[in-house]
Image (tube, rainbow, N blue to C red):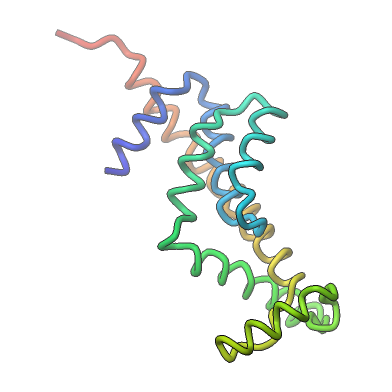
Length: 157
């Protein structure tokens, strides 16, 4: 299944560099904390850079979908809490914008959870996305190189 997915992406793009960059940026967008803006971010990235929007959208939606949304955003949030609160010693609750307090009040009323920190969510999601993209680029480039060679090679009869 994953192999077919990668081969289909390779058929859509002939440049290994563009395919790999699109794949890595799609993974970044999946962890990007701007909820409901992922498609707009992909369109913007594809417009600004010569990237394959289909690959970015496919990778983003495979990683971040309704079944994986909570683990993806939670991992970003807890990474931000660890970095800002744990390592840097910042009180993330005191740095919240004013509108987050009403969100926290509503969240506490319905779920019993208290104290969502806006900056932990923003910093952690972006950091995890960038780290994942940075790890995926050198990992996927040789894989896509072999796939494109296989796809572009003449078939022996």
